[in-house]
Image: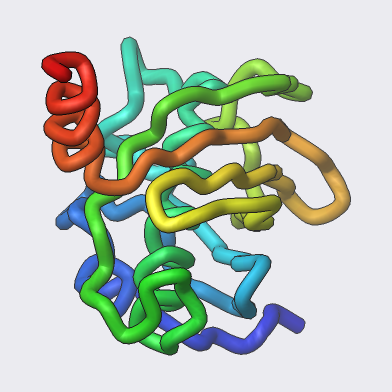
Amino acid sequence: MPPPILLQQVDIAGRIPHRGRMCLLDAVTKWDAAHIVCQASSHRASDNPLRAEGRLGAACGVEYAAQAMAVHGALLAESGEATCAGAAPRVGYLASVRSVTLHVQRLDTITTDLTVTAERLLGDANHILYSFRLEAGPQLLLEGRAAVVLDAATLRKTSDLVNLS
């Protein structure tokens, strides 16, 4: 039996900057202050915008995870769970990915839905570290960690002031 759906794709698209086919997630099935679990079927779509030469490489799974992190941040901001409780969601940028292990070569050959899980390991007002994993049933497809920087333009302005003094 599939997990219950808390948010559908239209709800997700309203919370992240990706629209249309680039909104890769179908549903949020579970979330709390530290975790989010999403489902996706777009890896099987022949018109998936991340496909290259008709294939969807496993490294594209990082984008699925990044979208889950973005939805998580938006939900935290809405719920008052974030560092800046009650504030509007802030623009986040994927600054780096580390310890990424690809356990498969391609995602488009996976016949079942993807489960995308992200865990917020630590964070402050401007930086967040997540771990993530993509699975299809019991099969682990990829895993890793990602650093997210919020409002990078604001941080740059602040660092420019520091450099000038």
